[in-house]
Length: 270
Image 1 (cartoon, rainbow, N blue to C red):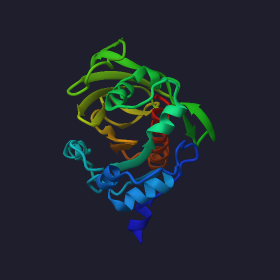
Image 2: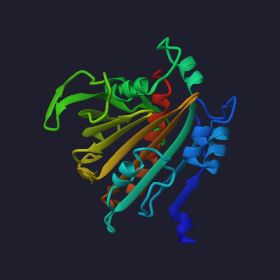
Image 3: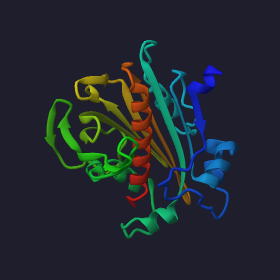
Image 4: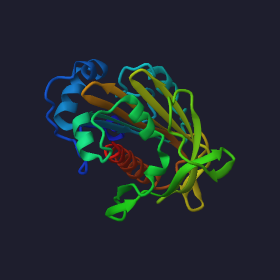
């Protein structure tokens, strides 16, 4: 069926995923309630549930229940029928104990304030790697990445990553291996046990002279919920691209590998 060719849903274990297959000591009732029994069982078994689709359908299907569910759903990009739509979602269950063992912070615990600092430490994304299917090797994703003074002022500033993040609006520049230099608006929300960061692109993105994604036509959401012994991490990217020849393969490969890169980077920051 045509729908099956368009809709691609998978429970996958990324080759470089550090925590896939982790056996948790006991059931995390809070995480299970937020994602539902079906996805929770898959998370315990594989560490990840992911889905990507390009049929233009609305709604984020893997989005866990949280105080920011409606805000995330409201961030979905409107799709032009003439364009190429793409939506990726990844859901992860991460053991705090294993995150601390993998990291180098020396901390004995992880709080939502720790997560808030990590997600706002944009400069630490510099040098993070991803697997390039076109080059068939690991490549540096961002040659440069840092916060800037404003949407029209690209003066480099220090990471604004202290205190509670709720209501913070920042801007960043990222020099992407494939897409060149782009700027983003970063909107942060933090309440109790939950942290949300929304990236929204502010300029055109593409390869060379071919600009496929226009300002405001791509978002990335990073949602983290403290579930006691574990962190529940949800990543999504949603976009509407000009339908150039070959753009489907380029978008599919690039965006899914970038979400995997963000995930792997996040797991090394504690």
